[in-house]
Length: 75
Image (cartoon, rainbow, N blue to C red; front, side, top):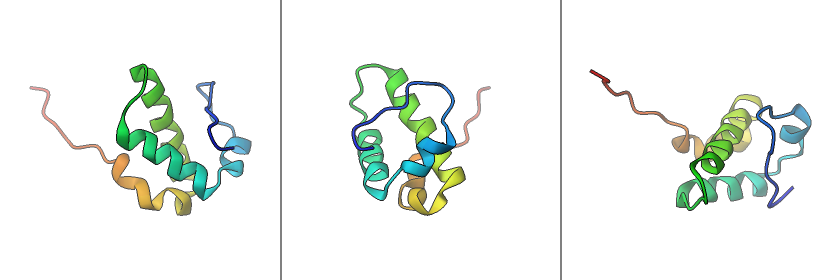
């Protein structure tokens, strides 16, 4: 599954089941470097990592820092 992207807004269970530790590492590296052609590509990867964290937490554990959201005050 390496170098594959998720093109739909819904991430299938099959996609998550096929993810390997190497796939998740590559995903995390893309998120860390943040060198996407558009913000939507980065958001797509972020949603994929979030789905992995929810369904296969053992794969995402080393990269949860990429999902942390800092609280902020909009006022």
